[in-house]
Length: 282
Image (cartoon, rainbow, N blue to C red; front, side):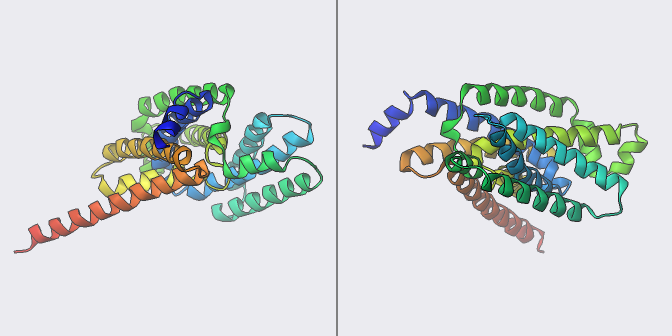
């Protein structure tokens, strides 16, 4: 039976698309996640993913079969509004995020309550369905993977300095304001596209968990980046295979695979720390 399932898995186009999406978006989210977690922006990605609910609802309200464009557009609007409020008001960042998150979710729920017949589509965006990804999303994910990945590695020094010490980056001539806006826009695009992979509820986990696992076994930023990308790839790939093999939801399977990697690396970190402390003892 298991062999038969494996054969079907590799002959169906939808399964290949799902695996390709996991291979592209898993490492990309993990790569961005290194800088997101270092800049303490995990709640920001959560805000953007939940704000997407209003964009999805607006897309259905306007009769669109695929609400990807309004999803991305509304998410970008919320992200830019967040930065504008942070620069032009005295509100704390977490207060602004909570305000925009709750307002966006409330707007989306109200719009959806007025619509009929979209329950199945909403479940897809809430909980993710990587096996329902079409060729359009694959091309979009490929474009983001190439452009964002290349952009990060080409500007790694400036991005690292901006992450570690924003004031020092400004003194060194780094265009801090422009790069902050650019980073937020890129992060928003990746989160919006990844919603089809994991869903609104779970998408932040793919950004947070692989970098956290990489931090357990890394000694410097370079190692954390490569480990994080590897864990994002492994978590996305193994979670998708597990979903198909055991007929379980794909998004939660990917999240649990990443958590499994985190637990393994945490134990490795404990062993290393224990060995180091023994070596330092006289």
